[in-house]
Length: 208
Image (cartoon, rainbow, N blue to C red; front, side, top):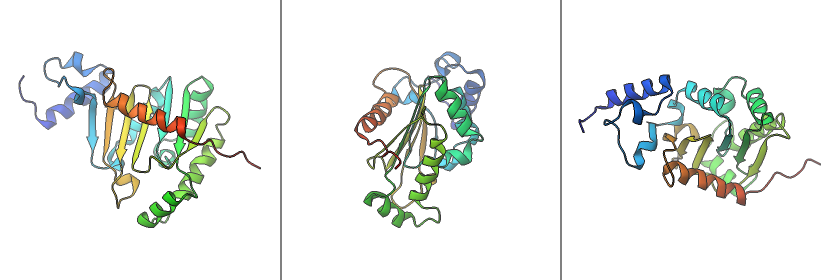
């Protein structure tokens, strides 16, 4: 197989996105065949992920959107009209789940101390929860502190995965774009991780 430099791969991915085709079909013989072929792109920080990609993944999703970020607050700054879009998709039958952190937990308080950010984690969780309340009862929300170091957002058979750095804010997390290619690959591993956390998480207490 001939070697392919980074710029050529970037061009291939852009063509793939425009044509909505599997790169295995378009670029047969030039792409990797192992599990790493599920990795479509990588960025050194979550904030470097193109806003258009978040929009595209959310709008194209038809079966599920699972957001397992500790706050996922940034989605409301990246995707215009996201509350109405999510409501419409959930009403149509899409499986919409948000797995958030516990705002008052020791894990959250410790992370807030590390980040020392003006907009605290608990405030970001409150904002997300308030927006999701506008989608109820078609949205599902649960809370767990077990995913503080890893965020996964799943859109049908694609995912964005962020690994949090010890002393950095969430937007500084290295991020991968993954697409499912077959069983037991990277995508399935992350999807199973989210599903396990979901099954062991707590539903929010009903309002008084």
